[in-house]
Length: 316
Image (cartoon, rainbow, N blue to C red; front, side, top):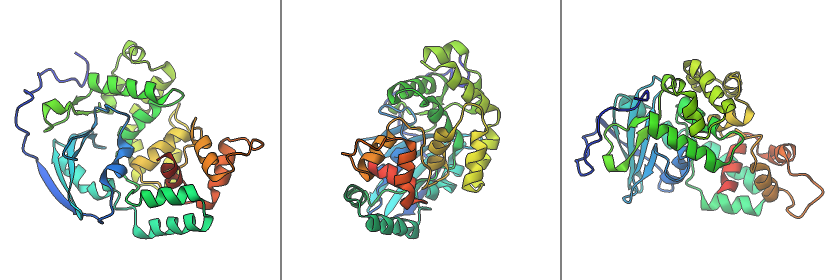
């Protein structure tokens, strides 16, 4: 039996939902957009660790820095509150860090500063996107491993290939999310040790080449050191993440904006981002300027401190 896979059969689909181990009600601004903010954690349609149900609830299967599994159900019950239920050994940690996960550490002052920069630069596309997405917050999950593995899988392949591999491996080697209804098919990603025990042929079967699987195995050996970066200064945190063989600037930035709440993390090396940023902030009709990382960084410079916000808004 593969490591991390439950040997028991899941409960029947009509089995009642388990009672949560902890609950919380969090006040939010009426303009806050729960789904838009947390979608940064979703890895494609069908992500087994992220579900949205018809009632508007978001269900997350999580692995805490200590390796504990936990489940979150988040619901916007009123315009000014988010109700949260948590299950599993990681439930208390997940509720303790809930405000950061919701993006509430993304302060009014920081967002006002960004809005002033956008207004001063006067780019119509960015102004319009900011207006449409005023409820978007930069989240801080505090869970480096949960962000690192899918980011590594997204290196040098299409996003569809990466998501397919991640979904396959999580379903095969993860565990059913504690407390979640069986018919939701929500999973918690394997812990670092369980990723490290995946046989080489299973990586190949999932479409993951040796370079990416070796990077994940290298990261698994120092997973606890990587989780420590959440409490570090941003440049030092990114530097430590990049010390893992096979993890570079792009992957570190993808982790930093999700796990650390870094509003300035720029995913240098992205296949599509220079085209999107340069096309929006530069002259889309200018064929003499090459759209590459250098040009992208040049155009993002006026927004320093908020460069991830710019890319997130333009992607939307």
